[in-house]
Length: 317
Image 1 (cartoon, rainbow, N blue to C red):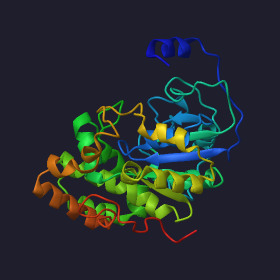
Image 2: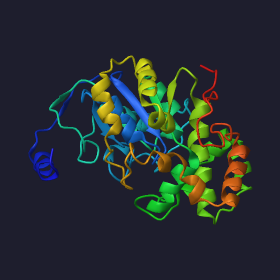
Image 3: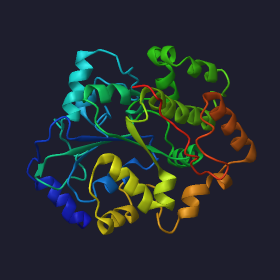
C-alpha cells in the first residue's frame, strides 16, 4: 500500500477486533537491531496474526507504564499489578498507532508480541501466559553494536538514564546473577563500546538461564541470511505452523519497517554478516572476546561470525 494511502487508512480505519485467547500467542524477542521485526514478518507471511509492535515500551504504550524501560523479573516473581498489566498486553487489550502500526485487518484470532525490551522477563511472561512459544532472535554482538553506535542508541527514550544504568540499578537482577557485578568491575563504564557489549551479554544471559531448551526457539539472524529455506522450515516446525514456500520467501527478502540503515538482505549479505571485522579495531575485537568470555558467552559464534550451534538454553524445566 502506498505511504499516502496507508496514512489515510490508519486515520480512518475502524478499531480492530482481537478475539484471540491468551494461548493464541507467539512471543518474538531479542535485542534491538537483531532482526526481531524481520522474524515477525516472516512468521506472519500470511497476515494471519495481529502483530503487537513493542507493547512493553512504556513511552509508547500506557498499558506498560508500570514496567521499567528495561525490566527484569524473575520467573517466580509475584506482583499482581504488573501481572494484570502484562495479561492485558498479552491478550491484545492494547490499541494505539505504535502497537498496531502494521495491522490492516479488522478481525484477528491470533497475535504475535514482538518486543525488544522484554528479554529480561521472558521466563516470567511464559509462566504468566501459560507457556506460549517464544522465538528468541540472536545476532552477532558486534554487528548489533555497530548498528547501535551508528544510530546513537543506548539510553531510555524519555529521560537521560543510560541502558547500562537502568540494567545495573535493578538489585533483583544482580542478586540473581552475581556474575553481572563481577563483570561490571572488569569494564570501562565510560566506554560506550564496552557498556553496550555488557548490555548484549545481559540481554542474552538472562533468557539463556531462565528458559529451557524446550521453551524457546533460538533464531539466528545469520542462519536466516545464509540458509533461509532450512531455517524457516525449522522455525515453522517449532511453531507447528504450515508454510507457503513462495509467500514466505517474499517475506524473507522484504525489508522490515525498522531497517533504519536501509540494508538490502539479498545484496548486502557480506556487510550484514561480517562488517564488524572492518568496523572495529583488533583491540576492540579482543576486548569484546574478553567480556563475552567473562560472561561465558564467547562460544556462541566462531571466529568467522557464524553460530556454532552450542546449546544455549538450560536443561531445567
